[in-house]
Image (tube, rainbow, N blue to C red):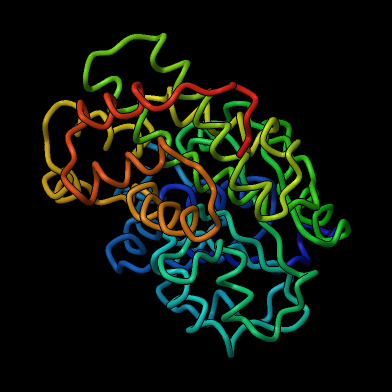
Length: 341
């Protein structure tokens, strides 16, 4: 993949994040085929060089070509980037199962934990793309709003793979003067940080919707990170990952950024809207809504204490009021701060 003109790269997923990453690679010099689900998105990109539905206002590189033909994008690639919502990752992986070549390095930049199986996105791909060796799978995660990446705002992320060679390959493919990429072998830590922070971001939005203060938000982020680390360590992650870009970095961004979809969902709940009303008005996916269910069930299964995440689950799915959830969190048994049980 050292020669930009020779590398064959496909991107599966034409949402804001998939489009931003596809364009980043195209601007760098790669010839990119982007699979999009909606015909109107393909037409928008091909006719007007803009994804008017999911990334409006960004002129896309001529090196990027959009298609509704999944096989055209997935087959015979050196690198395949998969950026679809977590709840359709399995279906997408199953469709690609007979298309993806053994030689292909498969990267996911999607963030979530599958309901039912409790697999991360790389786990779902490993389960569906059965011909791909684990050392050819990688994940890309970190504090990175699509709109800012598309505007070339300086951004830093982490590429993680069980194979250091694969992680370095992904690092070299994506790195630009505006997009710095670090490597890691801690796939589960990087993925859990990127997934669970969306649940905490819903809580942060609720705080803002209720009109509470910065003290509350700071406490939430700090204790939210503790919950993420508890779950990660239980699942074999390196604790240091949670003080890195895919951990505290992504958590801070999503809990404080007004353009975060998960924060927006929480803020509207805090303002009194129902989840059904909120989701009816959203075309793009707020991953924390579905991930909250996975985190709730997974943490109970593993015996990991995650009170904030549990209260968000109850608010989303059991109609518990934000005020009642907050009261229960603040009146829990008093504890030692360093108690990680």
